Length: 464
Image 1 (cartoon, helix red, strand yellow):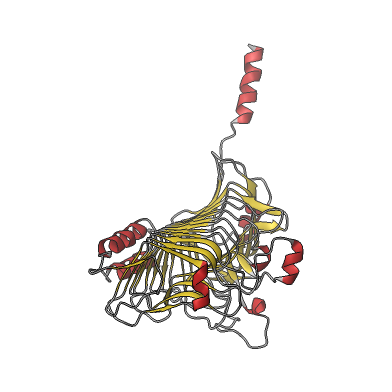
Image 2: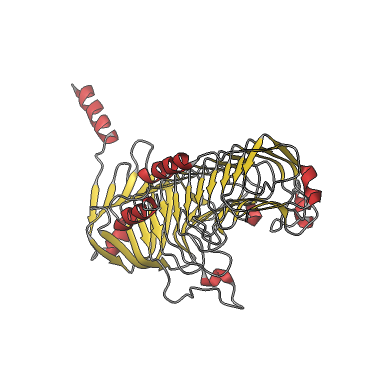
């Protein structure tokens, strides 16, 4: 009997019941203590009662959940816990989840509002930011336009900074960022770069033109880490009226996948700016002939561009840029061939895409003397209802392209004077494919509780 009692006590100590911690807007100090004192255990939940939480300042959310029992910071009722004012939140540990929170008129106390690290080397892993909204979060003391003669970083702020590994951002709504800086920045470093992050089923709403660089929606890496592999997945997201600058998503690292995203009436494009071996698959671009709406811009090497649908773009549907340098293969190359520059486009496969009523297709523009090399265009479809399409290709670049089984149709028959293009007598109909893709992407994107989600979806559907 004594042995049984001892075994019971041991088993009980291993099955400590998870706790719920309820917090009100009057308990800011209590909230910060609970989140940051490392007493939270797997399965615990910190629950924010309805109300406006302002003046949080610096907050640490540090704990270690498990793959079966995450630790949550959530709203009691989704969208009713509103976080505003200056915020610098550091999330680190593992299996932590933030859910149902509404960030409104909050801003970064420092550079980043929510950062998934404590400091260099102390990162988050297997964490999730889900069913949250960040809307109109702009520091009132910062300009909505670039300031001449001022370091851009001092007048910018990021909403989310991802470090570490296996961070998921999903089913959220982001809109109305006006000052410089990104909504979502993924950071890499030499010793911690296989991120395996997942960005999915979000709606990225209106972002007004900023007037300079540094207003992307998502950036994966940066120039200095661009030769490293990130393995980030960006899929099933909606980008509506994202007009901050000419790069909506800026890929600056290697081995990422971007698929099934919808870019709708957004004045910018999906850009492989630095890095190599990225996959762009089954994305849909709809510009409705708005000036500045763009498609895919390719620089560097090893990319796969497959099954993308690009419709009625007022800018380029496809741009393969000239290079200034070769790909750096050693540390000595980096000094000679700066990572901030343009490297040769090479070993790229562009196949089974449809370019419909896009203003330009650009094969080899830009300064530099490193022409694209071993770029395959195969089984693509090009069409335009008017004669204003322009296919730009310096003659010297054509030797670097291999054209095979491409199809085209427009009134005057203008096309590249090269084998590999077949002129059709009748246009193909991709309308049903476009509508199906748009509806499927909208079906599960964003937050169900936030009115702007439904409003944006109604707007897009009204165009069909």
